[in-house]
Amino acid sequence: MDTVDWDRLAGAAARGDEAAFTELAQGLLLPLRVVIARRQPRADIADEILQEALVTIHRQL
Image (cartoon, rainbow, N blue to C red):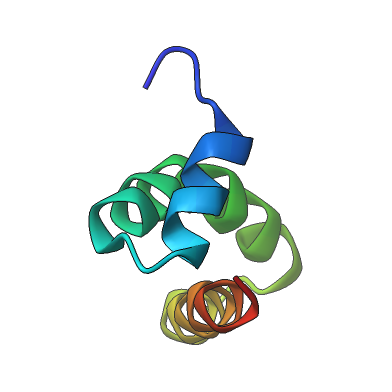
């Protein structure tokens, strides 16, 4: 994704558009992974934290 319309994706995901949520999650994946890895060096734990973050985002939409 070169230019991401975060508001459009979040709005569509909030209305139940799973494809929009997938695109949103894919756009957030690397930035979240970087932030989490800086605080949690164990990859297995970092992956669990990342998964929980994405689940929380999905629930909050």
